[in-house]
Image 1 (spheres, rainbow, N blue to C red):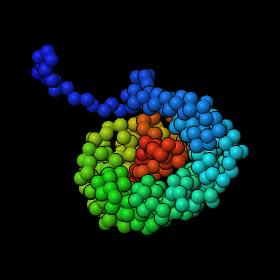
Image 2: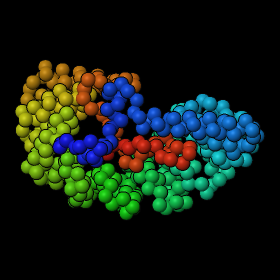
Image 3: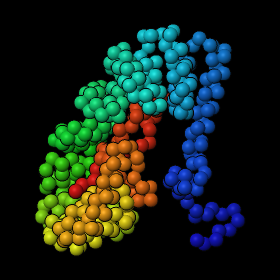
Amino acid sequence: MAESGKGDPTDWVTMKISPDIFEELGVRDPEQTQLEMKIAKKVRQVGKELKTDPYNLEKQLDLATYHIDGGNYTEAIKMLKTILNKDRKNPRIYKLLGTAYVMSEHEDEAILELNRARELDPNDPEIHFNLGGVYMLKDFYGNAVDSFKAAIELDPTDTFSYANLAAAYDALKSYTDEVAILKKVLMFSPEDKELRAALGTAYFNASLYDDALNAALCVVELDEKDPQAHCNLASCYSVQGMEEEAIETFKKASELDPEFSLPHTNLGSLYATMGRLESAIKEFKTATSINRGDSLAWYNLYNTYKEVGRMEEGQEAYKMYEKLMNDMNTGDKPDPTGGQATNPSNIPGGVSQTGKLASGGTLDQKAGTEELG
């Protein structure tokens, strides 16, 4: 960079720094700190106003709202219960109470309060959306479908509701319905890479492999540096019998992210089906060295060792697979040194706890795309 004279404009640019960097450095993200300061300022401001007007229920609800946005759920719940004793016909109270409950991981109470809010105000799309989110957390996917459908009927432009409805259909394995919903939401955001990838996954799960391949190619065109996109494309090539294209694309995914185990796991599976067992073993071993929590790689390694008669090594691989399965069943997490965490399939757009802050903003959470193959 050329040195600029004193007082002259420089060619420095401001870049957005990932919040993860601050966490790794052990310091607070300044944007998060700024947000917390704004919320704290609002809390103080409304608190002062309530000193001069202590019986103003709307201001009390505003204060509870800011407590929720600031993460002070216990105080918010306490306040809202007090307000509820004064007004049992206000749907906003129940909606906020349900929000505070779900954010504090009390889903059963949240469902109860949000249903009361829905009964009092059935035309509020946010109530239906939030209720659908809680149903997703409880694995009540049929109820979630009904709630997200109701939200869309009231607000046909709500892309969050479309995305979450698609996620509910995915959980129910209703892939044809999921495809239809994702195609609708993509009309609002045709360049959304993650939604496009989710559509490809839905096509794949519905055995619509030509459509899945076209969608996967589109995602790679949108972001040629995305290893997951290449991995999904390779899986589409594989199921179409295009083995050489699949091999090259899995390798490309590995080149883009050498610490990503999935391309090696899937490439190993492809080699195994082709009868190239030693190549398969090499890929499975690479996958497990990158991510010791990759249970599929361990299981496939066990089976491939058996095929070539390496029974002792096969038993060691099976022990690792069995341990990972037991850890999952008991709620223990896989070895944290094992590379990237296993990511359950979700539809981008988020199935967040409520989807939106009590003040009307959105929670900045993105779910991962499903892994094909």
